[in-house]
Length: 441
Image 1 (cartoon, rainbow, N blue to C red):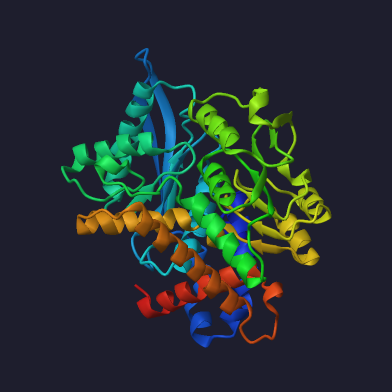
Image 2: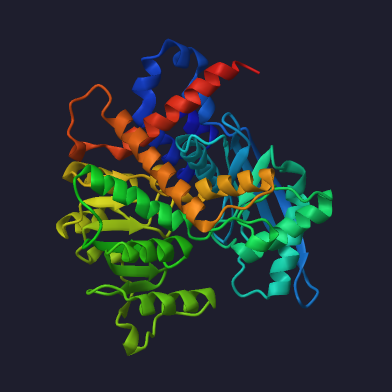
């Protein structure tokens, strides 16, 4: 880590993500002569390339605006680079590098032929007109287009990049290349998108949790579920959990907590969804929706059986983890990427709380993105039921792989699975084999 830290000085999010993996797999690498000789970990800790560019665009007043854009192509060992684009003021090189690193490991767990990448800009779509967002997307793709393609690098959406933005980006790609091909996923159905792509990460998260519960001899029906965030992942995780009989006691946003001690109703979730999609606040709910909004609060103080952090990186700290333990939480699965600090993860591990990392539990989005790529390449569409079945099967398969790795060579019971260690090692083994098989180019 000292060498890696020197090469990536000041990039704290990236170093945090790399160190988690290194701590889990260093003994695996040292126990294998081929992996040690190939310096697998050191090579995986360096992205193939980081592309940075300026984005120039005009606002509605005709004034020139400037933003920064990046694409981190971390690894194409397993297939073309694959990962989302994030438009948000918090986007930095370090955050995109950490996301691309995580994506590489996440994609390897799916057993689909996908590499890992991530990109985005410090542009904030909120507060801008549709015309301004369209012009920004066209300018962004004008720079990105030379680096992507269906067998090279296939971006998707992320925070700030939804179906609208993907449509603008896809159109700009077609205009620049003259090719109507699957070079970007997350598209609307009418332009080659897949059923359930919007729902995929949230649904997949719940399917993974159901697999965790089943291994422990339990089911989700009747469980109290605390969720953070109110974006696509949080809302669709809440909806799927409610469909399966769980009681969802919270959502949240950056300003406060949506608390429903007796559980959110479908009407309440629909109201939150409509307000969020319209860019409106949820801090003054009507009495009929049956929840209260608590400014400055987090979901982790509410008693729950299951916690699903779905907002952003490092949102849940050690104090939050202790509150979850005291409140009876026994399962934590990450809907966001790296939402727990290292200290929070240590608290959960010590307390025996089963904790699934995002590279496993939130892989549903990339799974359905891969299914969209498959549909585009085959010039066919799959019905929602088929997509949902494949999504569930792949998430259950990821869970099975992790449990097998976590308990390899041990006599541990099903209740003692270290999901973080199992996910990191299982992903590492697949990537390490690819490094060795590729040789030195």
